Length: 248
Ligand SMILES: [Mg+2]
Image (cartoon, rainbow, N blue to C red; front, side, top):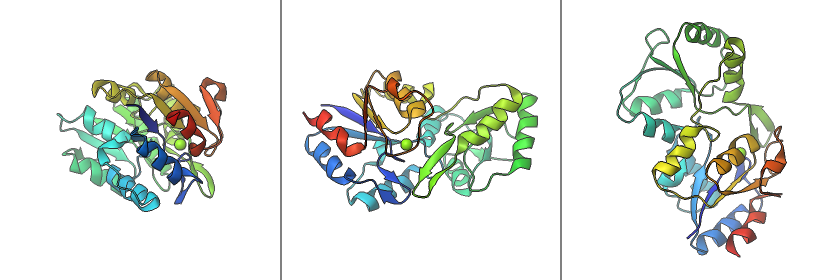
């Protein structure tokens, strides 16, 4: 049985809108008995919120254990530790991390800084983070996406903040997102052999697929890529165009 990992933002939906032909395509894939993992760098919503969104848009039951986000990777990585963490991100993110039995605390008292996404960036907070990382505080980012697609165009993502800090300190911040080793290790450790990866980003989806030695499909329904699109094995317009390759 084949296993596919499909991206969500820009591949399955844009903002609150399903991309044309996705539902029909997914039904065909499911009917073929192909297993689907929903792989996303979205870290401003919890896996359970993403499940609700997918179920609402698709009118299908989604198994939450098939939704792999940087938060799932975080939970997997630190399941045995109770860390003091400073979170740069939404209230939802803070709540989720607290529920993992972590101690969400001030920057001063934290042993780890976790960079998520905020609706409005707080540049004085970013400056404080830069200061504390420069004197040795550990830092991790949920993802490094510079932008993310919405139905109103691209908006600045986590990666924009990560890049400010990286450029200022000339460091590379480790990520729990698709482009990083932690993300692909999750699949390897859990013996999930992904055969096909579908997504709209070369820097995350296609790199992730290459890390797993999967066949990679790049769709042009999402963001504009800055990396070479020819890194992908096959380029198509949208998710439903991939289906014949999977079911033949
Ligand atoms: Mg995407």
